[in-house]
Amino acid sequence: MKDNIHSDKVVLSIDWDNRFDYMQQHSGQHLLSAVFYKLYNGETIGFYIGKGYVYIDVNLPSINNAEIIKVEEFANRIVFSNFQMRSYIVEKADINKLPIIENNISNSKIRIVEIDGIDFSPCCGTHLRATGEIGLIKIQKVQKHKDNIRVEFVCGNRALMDYRWKSNCIKNISNLLSSKDKDVENKIVKLYEEKKALERENKALKEEINK
Ligand SMILES: [Zn+2]
Image (tube, rainbow, N blue to C red):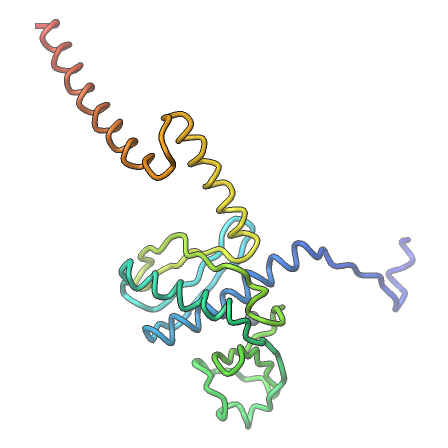
């Protein structure tokens, strides 16, 4: 096998589950970035796709919950509409004919990834054939990061896995509390307040005993 390094023939294989997962997260990132720009003029200035989490940094000083829901709903509407995604090469001289947000590319030929007239991004990554393949997009957390917002999200199969464990978690808590799943939040708040009151009472009693 050692001799093979001198051969001009190699055998490659793709870990498809892993590849498809990254295609879902990355295509979802293109779409989510496009929606932030369309709705609030927020430009994506960085992104990270890892095994544990995925985020984009958007140059907005802040965003409220209603706006986050609007982004999520708009992005998922584009997913459910199953728009075509395609990639092609454009000559540098022709790049200004496309509505590209950031254009500081020095290559003579530029690969564009287009979501059916909705978004045009220069990118050399791996993408899906249509937005429907992204599956559900769920924003999990938004926090301030320097002067921007960092938006953590999951797409497709990761969204299913996230839903599965959260659903399981709520089911276990509701069994433990003998409550319906819709009531567990209120019940936990009530239990927490009772615990605090008991701690205060306990402290007061201890102080009285030790007088
Ligand atoms: Zn890309």
